[in-house]
Amino acid sequence: KIPICSDIEAFKEEIDGRYGILFKNKDPDDLRINILEIARDKRRQKKILMNIKNLRKKRSFDRIAKRFIQVLGGHRHLY
Image 1 (cartoon, rainbow, N blue to C red):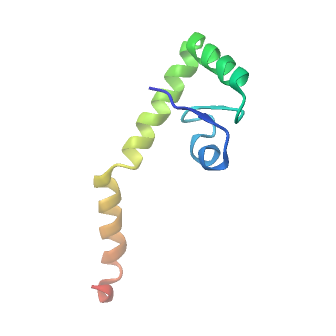
Image 2: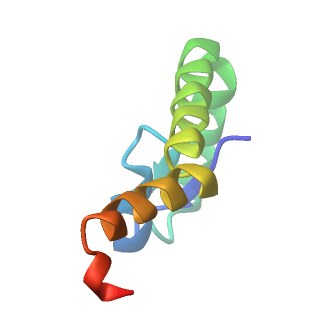
């Protein structure tokens, strides 16, 4: 599924066109246009979905936990 979000700051930072679609806040016409455009653009759909898949891998619990342990490993005096 491709996120379609209004362009408020919180979503702009995370989505930024690579992980979903942004439409102008409080603009139903822009929302409609963006939905129609992404529905027609299979190539863009695949690109966004691949970006999301890669982001999920990058942010997986296992990966973050391993990185956290590595960081703590360099600071043994903290625990």
